[in-house]
Image 1 (cartoon, protein in one colour):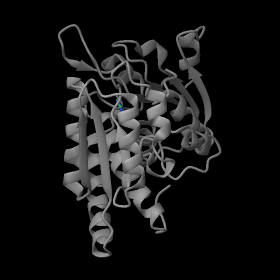
Image 2 (cartoon, helix red, strand yellow):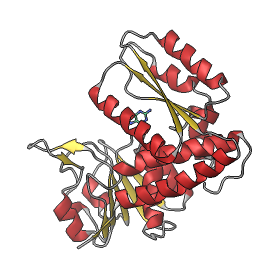
Image 3 (tube, protein in one colour):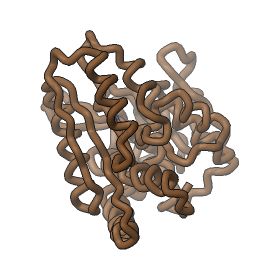
Length: 288
Ligand code: GUN
């Protein structure tokens, strides 16, 4: 039976360290500040934004929310981003996705100053990541890397198979793992013989967005399974992409859903906000 990786514990330990770090910055007159933009009234986005705000409050990061109506235009949103880019008191800017369909989301993400792009979605920051020269890391993949490090997993030389090539999770995770010298395979809906590929994985990342997609027979004996899925099963219960019991029976370590990768995403957002502020103030960074 696998060791269950406790994302809440790792989150709490990381946040405690960051709380201390923020207090030390405050003592030097430096106040990390995260601005979160939310457009419209998507209930899931509202929950995410509230949770981001709570995490900021918990560790002493100033949080500012910009709630804009559904009918906001792209131009109005770009204007707000320009103002926040130019605001010296702002460390990080995040526009909660998805935005309403009439808004040009690509233009929005590309307008955020790369120095304040705490999501790491800007093409400049993605390019930095490709070159291994990034100072911030995309939040969900960074959360998984942090979990692996916390559990003492040697990443170098491991076979890492990722299912799902999203811009937010799969693709950037392939870069983080490549930069740590893993041998990476990025699978997607057109992958042939998926089971054959996943069965080779020392580290298996499930980021498909479909419940019960990864079954026990897809997992190598002793593998580490990271489940990014947040789905609802037929009973409305939150579940991941993996059939937990089957995968846990094969794996050496596995993340549960909820309580695994999920809690790490906001933790890494807090880390990026502190990093963005330190970088702007030319303070040495003690984390990648
Ligand atoms: N919507 C869902 N996840 C995310 C995220 O990590 N960042 C932003 N900006 N929007 C999201």
